[in-house]
Length: 229
Image: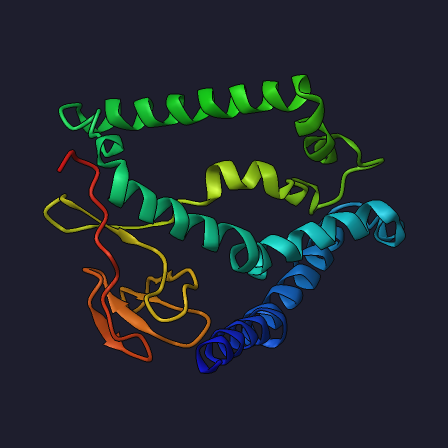
């Protein structure tokens, strides 16, 4: 019973951070400031913000940027995939571009990602079940500054479940760690001023190498390998 209570308390703490914490407030203020700035610099079409279209766009914006999606969907899926690959699918950890020059490697990844996105988009139009989710892209009656966030969670799950904290050293070598905080599973963000990975939920901080600077996290960020073990 105590374990169940601990789980419930952990979920409540993360829910509070996502819905009432500073990150959510900052996201709402960013949304308001962005909309006002766009309209002051353009045609000032304020009427479109009183439409159902904008309400839908704003809902999707908050759903993704305030951490709701990461809390309920991509976070659990990421941990499930990570455990499965490490336990049973180490053959998937391939380094296909290790011998390529940097420019060619960048082109390889850009074209690969674009090809996968193209295939997923075609699937979204061809499959009737997938279309029920994907059609949200094509339903706005008019565009707003937030229309780009109208991406359904099914689409986002394909590309948003593997979170990597990448840092390139001065000597050019690349360090990759899981971007999932080892405290409660939130996604860390890069602090360019301090050159640290900071957790927006409970304040844990990690060095660029993934080591703990300050808690409540006790364990370093998990190292990610792109080469076959």
